[in-house]
Image (cartoon, rainbow, N blue to C red; front, side, top):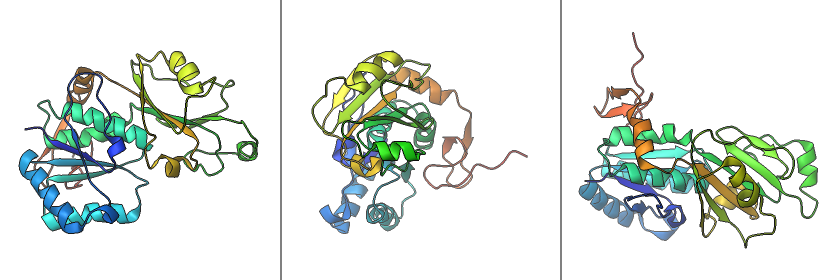
Length: 276
């Protein structure tokens, strides 16, 4: 039985170009669905799949986060993992897609949930922006703030795995040292001289570019501007992802008993006991 993966927006359910992947449930915000309905639907999902891993951007509005925790509490279930992710929305969708691919393997729920933190480190996420005046995810100096007021100025931003801010056509952003495929979403039509697909993707030697539409709903809030071309370069091969996760030492959660990797259980949040 595949472990259920859920996201908080339908535009984070990305098509899987490399092999099979389970579908993803979409958990609706408080304004779109009564609490009773959310509890009933989530309970049915648990009955079908046993465990539920929920990924959401760490910038998700507080009432939405409170709804997720309320549903978990009312179901009195430790089979729901709520995982805030410090990545831009498109990259959260890419990470969810990787977990959807791995959910069809023999990885247990504890390992799958804790694998989210591991795999996030291997996603190169950023955007081409028309303004960085409201960007608070990377250090922005006075010069870029002033330049944001000028028409036609563009900025290249990398937020993961290390923050970087450049001007397209100038300094380059170092790319991943392993094969990746780039997923791209843009707020409008493709521009002449597109930096992401025309310059960055070839420089990084990505194995392909997948354009998705529309730009995720939460992207404008995350980047501080509606004028963005968001990208995420990640490992596309499910077998490589599996080997990466399977190579990590596993522990047993001292609280809920699930097998996991890393230093904390994704379901009950209990830390791994320190080695004596």
